[in-house]
Amino acid sequence: MFVNTELSVMVVEDSAVQRMHALDLLANLGIKRTLEAENGRHALEVLGGAGHIDILITDLEMPDMDGVELIRHIAESHQVNALIVVSSRETTILSTVETMAREHGLIVLGIAQKPLSYDNLAGLLAKFEPGQVGARNSEAQYNFSAQDLREAIINKQLLLQYQPKVTTHSGVMRGVEALVRWQHPQHGLMAPAHFITFAEENGLIDELTDWVLETALKQLRDWHARGLTISVAVNLSARSLSTPDLADRVAAATSRIGIEPKYLVLEITETAVMSDLALSLGTLARLRLKGFGLSIDDFGTGFSSMQQLSRIPFTELKIDRSLVHGASEKPHLHVMLQSTIEMGKKLHLTTVAEGVENPSDWQLIRLLGCDVAQGFYVSKPIQGDGLANWLKQGTQHLRPARPSMG
Figure 1 (tube, one colour):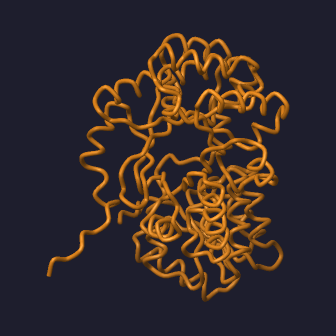
Figure 2: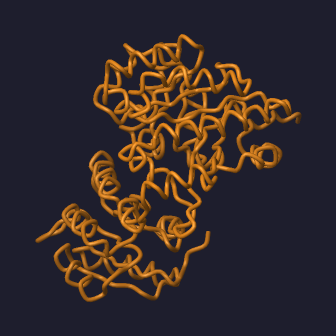
Figure 3: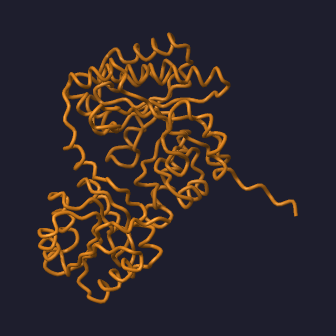
């Protein structure tokens, strides 16, 4: 694995022995730009002089200012790009801290148990990519107007990438999820997190949704003509669900382009349904009556997901990556993931695991009987015209090993 030796890294640890051990490992990995601090308050003082660093490695239990408080402060100051937490505490606490850091907008490279090992640290450092910036930090860099986005829709600055979804028992592609990107002339390729909310707030979400549907369905028609009979999933926003004519617009688009409704899956988050419950439920019922698939997205992140399953005719349950990635190493996540998959099966829903990022994630969801997998271990999002090539070259590691003839 490649570790960028030009990284700047700070180690925050109250134990001098543990701190020196971490610094020695960094030196052995070729990292020369290192800083150290004995607690959170000391770390903030050192950062005040350093200005900005790539990665912070911190313990949690420290005197004067603990690691949790330190994480909150660095998230507010934007002086650190990414975080590694090192602790001997139980996994439930570590998962809570990891989630907190991500919610603050920080990139979390991972959680490591004490004592740090060379291989473990190298693997975590290798995840860092130059230019990485936490989600909330990066949002502040983008400056555009409603007219800019409207012109982007009209002038075809938007594009779709497609992330494959494969069956876990065979590695065969079952469908794709369409993910919109904005190829901005100044900011480069922008992920939807940077402009979807803006579109909702500025009355552009219907135009954007119609463009995504039209583009995805035409691409699907092309795949079907070539004998690739798969489905495509498209995300719906809260504002779209509250639009009374949405079901008619979706049906009109599929009819005009020549796609059977069963090949279109509409992904809805729980919070989107809750934004205007009466209108949303009516829209979802009409979509299902017309034959479209409905997927509850990010399942496991809301407080009333069980209630949503009881009152909406979903066909698919998409398990959030927070329950999937790392579940093989975290017993409490393992239990929650297993229970969710079992519940989905009993409700006759197709279960889809998001965030499958490594062989351990893949093996676990296969073992637990999840139907479909999606994530970087399967494939990163790719251009529509690249799907055929990916099918030829990208699925070998997903196929079950053939039994030995010897």
